[in-house]
Image (cartoon, helix red, strand yellow):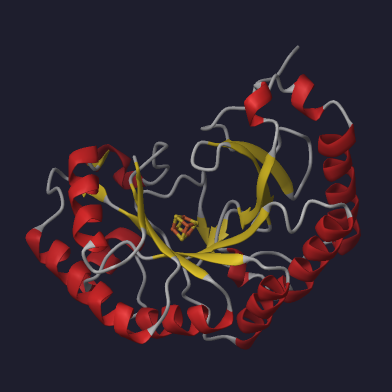
Amino acid sequence: MVLKLSTTDHRSDIVGMRYIYPVLSRRAGGLSIGINFNTNNTCNWRCIYCQVPNLQRGVAPAVDFGLLEEELKAFFTRVLHGDFFESFNVAPEQRVIKDIAIAGNGEPTTLKELPEAIALIGKIASAMGILPKADFILITNGSLIHQSHVQQALAQLSHYNGQIWFKFDSATEAGRKLINNTGQSLSAAIENLILATTLCPTLLQICLIDYNGHGFSNTEHHAFLELLQEIKQRCDLQKIMVYSLARTSQQPEATLIKPMSIEVLTAFAEDIRKLNFTVSVSQ
Ligand code: SF4
């Protein structure tokens, strides 16, 4: 059987590996090599749009470094020199490794050994010629950047010219509680964002959702623009990505959530551009 990778199929078992899952990335226009350390589906947040099935509050389990090394070498070899693209019927124009993305089924910075894990990925991917051509990305909710093991991890990421994609879905305390189910204050999140930018190039991810038909409220809109104005003064963000839901939420609130319309996303992006940020939009 010829399997086909799709832009929506993020099954981590598609190549039969514990840590690696390939995804055809809509945004990137090629192969994204996902690395999942949250093999137990754990996160310290519970976003109501989260697409992780059976999401649990908790931390990533200890890494089997021997297995991680084996999987990285085997998968990279298969993509570079084997039948990977043919066997997954990938279109010729998408047969390129766009990035290695540490993301997966939970919050990767809950992994205590993240510095060592990033160092291993960086070393092997560099030796095999994948880095620095491809991007090296850590996708995070940013809530643990004040912890020293995360700062060490970001130093490793920076060493390999990596980048942080920092989640920021609401600019109000109420919105953060509703959407992300986090107790972390807005001011603590801002300080973590500023700290992130001092350690590694950082992009901001804003996922807007329409909860219960409320759309994008004026309160939230204004709070975001004020917040971004403050951030502009205090740190250097590479880019802001505005987007909405690509896949169905696996949370109990799923039936109350709809993607935000492209018109709302585009208008918001235009307002952000007026603050002199580079902004991308996708739905
Ligand atoms: S931070 Fe990411 S993994 Fe955690 S609950 Fe939110 S969407 Fe899910």
